[in-house]
Length: 283
Image (cartoon, rainbow, N blue to C red; front, side, top):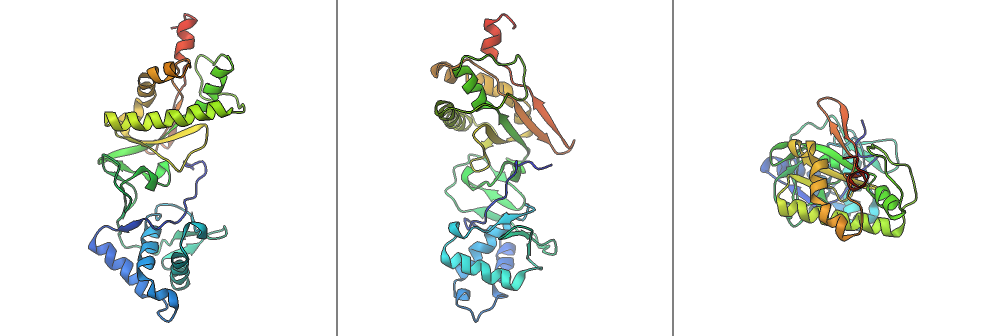
């Protein structure tokens, strides 16, 4: 099951080794590169590149986009790949696409070096995240405050806004809405809603985090602690009542898709146009 619909993260260098064991692994990888080449002098960039790779070891594939790396970082990556293809890195099918080799077995743990804004512990496979902007995708999060995390997707919010703006009725219960073009106003409403959602989750201490980089205009990805995920649709309904009223919209409960890894299936909580049904006497 592909959760990130689809998502291939890019290598970044905003991670550092979290413990002495990981620092030793990073140092050993860098020392085993060609010291005769000029890039070998840039050990700080080399260590940052290695830590960035380790942060992505839970992914079947990542891409190396040289536009997001400095010249020194790109040269460091080439030096690492030149010596460690097969033992640390493996090329995949796409251009500039790699994965961490299954021959690489040391346990490592790296930490996002961004300014910490998360009010609770968020971790992935050997990664400690300190800011939502450092989390590449919703399925990267494994634990929130030590509690098992589930990938959640709030679906078709933009479409619901667009239908409301056009005076269209929504189905009484729905999992998917018909595809329609989203106006600039509908997209603005989605952006404003996500900002509102971020503020409210932080303010209320909800064990959930919206993922910034793994999203589409009509989807809001959220990693949530198990018990939070189960009730996310109702929580969103109660939370957003005043927001929808202030924006001249009818109150809705958006559909929420939750991936249950132990059961290997999706749990889909249907969307409900709450205010529309009240007006029609259906509730």
